[in-house]
Every structure is written in structure tokens, then in C-alpha cells.
Length: 106
Length: 161
Length: 266
Image 1 (cartoon, rainbow over the protein chains, first blue to last red):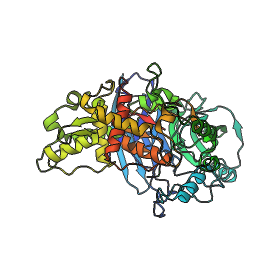
Image 2: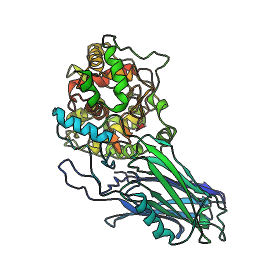
Image 3: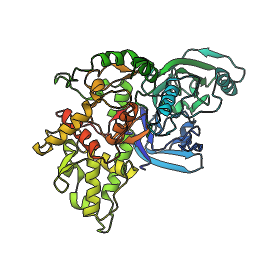
Image 4: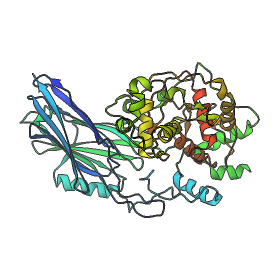
């Protein structure tokens, strides 16, 4: 599965508030469902999400099973300087995915 | 449909019963029964875990969500807090809770002055018509909240296959 | 079926509707007036429309991206990718989804887009066809269908007329335990609410689409099976000729409307 769709502006003015949108491919299995034969389907969700900007954490989230499948998040950050915005998320098994986006700030 | 609670003769439970009596359409499990589900008391406990004994005041927080939800599997919601987001005065965290899902927590979001705007949009699951509550913790340690009552309907055509 | 039995088996909100329909049993359900015909997108909530409109927020696009990878991946005994024959999908696949189901000469009957993709895999790539509703088939179909976004659904070939008529017969036939036809809801009562949900006109302009109920992308055949199960009728199997005839009729019924795959629906 394509892991994610990330939307970070390529360019921004210094001090401008920019919007970052992330759409991650993940079933977000709640752990409350049962299969057709009655077996409980184990929980499997993305439980943590971090956004850093040139290494500084600018946004963090803890997610619970009540977040919908294919989690979508849209949040804001101030365009302070040119560099790299990194988004990473971790699931219940401890696996982490990382995506980066370059931004030019003038 | 995964998160509906079976509580007495719900509409979904009614259909499942009728299907099995008719016998023709297979034994597909339509309902999943969750654990003893969250109650307002469980939500209160989850809130106390975050807030402690501090006072939670009404205000500053706004919740934008459709009052009539098309499908409880994915409800678009935006929580925003009125704040200058300066180093001296900003939102540290937004906590979202619910009343009737199996668990009271939905998500915790953490900000700082670098956020520029204390606003988060996401999509949540709601098992039933219920209250959604958002609590903001400010940099001065104070807590503010807002709530929204959302009506959740089921899809008209139940999937069984 | 006595009226007492009907009352016990239906959704509470449908009771009044059903009595009215039973009473009007002999009246033939009609087509939607051309002036009223429009994409079911217009009946969706603001939030659902916003989810569909933004390619960065539309979960269906995750599948389209995977489909693009599959389009370019060499596969099968021939070691060929779709791209090796069809090149850039944006050019070669534009308009394709808007004229499927299409007539397949070798079978002397129509096939839908999923079947077309699998026949290509089999005959030109010598690759195993993808299973119905598999992530791969959904992704590739979504990628192909996406290339037709905005293209109006075409007038079908004359050769398809008998199959369209067969599909229409299924659509208008009362079936299942509720003795309900598709037409009674989607031709006669679109726009009204059934158990809190808006009844759409039932145009397949956005398939394969991301259905919130499924929390996944799914095909039109899956949706038709859901519908028939919901009507308490026996659903047709995946790939059954009746499924394709129904799909074909629905596309004919939606002719002139623009394709908008991958759509988002509740």
C-alpha cells in the first residue's frame, strides 16, 4: 500500500503559518471486531505521530482506536527557515515510517 | 459497523435476527459485541487522568463537526483554540474524548508556539450518537473545554457478504 | 406476505414507505427526469464532498498511487508491464472507464473494467488474474478509472442493447423478502431519507470508490452485492453475467454524467 500522501508547501514566506496535511494508509484495526468465525481480530493501529522541523518537534499526537482508518491529520506550523520537515509515525508493533519534505522559506 | 454496541433491540440487531430467522442468506456475523463499553463515568475518569483536580472552564475551544453524521466510521472533526500562540501564551495540548465508544480517548495533540495556530483536523470513529468533548491545556496550566452532541446513523444497506 | 410480516421485518423508518409501495404495486417505476439527473456527489454532505475533492485528503487516492506502481511493474511470463503496451496512462486510458462495461467480441457479451484488466493480464502478460476485490485489482482499476475524471459517460454501442435491457429488467424487478426493486428507491424516491441516510439516484460515476462503511476502496460489483443483501435478496456472485448487465444498465442510465473516480461515499 502506498504508505502516505503528504502535503507540505514547497515555498513559504518567513513567519507565514503553513498547513501540513497527512493521509496515511493504515487499517487502524480497533481490536473490538471479530472475524466471521468469531475470533477477535487483534488491535493494530498507528499510536504515535511526530512532526519535526529541522530537528525541532513542532507537533506530536497520540492516537487511539477511535481515529478512523487511513488516518488523516491537518495541522499548522510557522515557516521559520528553509530546511526539512519530517513526519514519522509508529504502530502498535513498534514499526516506524518516516517521510521528509523540503521547504524553502524566503 | 464494527463499533456499534448491541444494547437491547437496536435497529442493526433487529435486522440480524430477521436474517437468521429467514435462513436464506447465510450466517454472516453482522454485529460485533464490544466489551462493557465506555460510559460517562469512564470518560470522566479519562479526563481526570489528564486534568487532575484542576478546574476545567468552558470557552476558548471550538469543535466543528457535522451534527448529523453520514457514517460513524469516519467523522470529520476540527478542534481549534482561540490563542495568540506566543511563547508566553499558547496551547500546549488538545485532548479529545468521547462518551460511548469502547474507550473514552480519541486522540491527544501537542502543540507549542511554533504551531502558529492551535487547530487540528482529523477523522474519528463514533460508535453511536454521543457527546464529543475537547479539552485544551494552555501554557499557563489552565484547562478549557467545549463539547458537541453528534447524531450517528447507520448505513441504510447493511453489508453481509 | 401479510402486512404484519412486512412490519416485523423492515426498518422502522421504512414501514410507511413500504405500505405506499405495496399499494402502488401495479404502477411501473419510471426513469429519472433528465432535468433531475445528476451525480450522487450533489446529495452528499459537505464533509464527504470535501473529502472527495481534495486529492490529498481522499483515501481513494492511496489506492490510485498503488495502481500507478502496478501499472509500471513488469509482470507475468511475458515480463511486461501495462506501460510497456499502453505507455502513459494519462493519454492512453483517458475516457476508458467512461465507456465500460464494453462489448468483448471473443465472449459475445459485455465485460466490465476489472474483467478487461484481468483478460489483459492473462492474454498479454501471461500473468495470473487478480482476485475480485483484491487490493491489486482495486488499485489498478482505480488508477485506470482516475484517468477518465471529468469525461462524460458515453452512449453505448448498439451491440449492447440487449444486455442493457437485461440489466434494466433486473433493476426494475421486485425481488427478495421485501419484494422491493432497485427502481422503487433509486428512481422513485431518490433524495428522500431511508433510516437516516439519503437515497442516492444510484449512478456509478465514481467507481471504484472509497466507501466509509467499508473503510476501504471497493468495486461497483461489491456495492451491488451489498444493496441486494440489504434488500434481503440473494446477491449475484462476483463476475456473474447479471452483475455486468446491471453495471451496464447503470452506466447507460447515467449517460452524460461525468466520471469522478475515486469518489467518496458513506
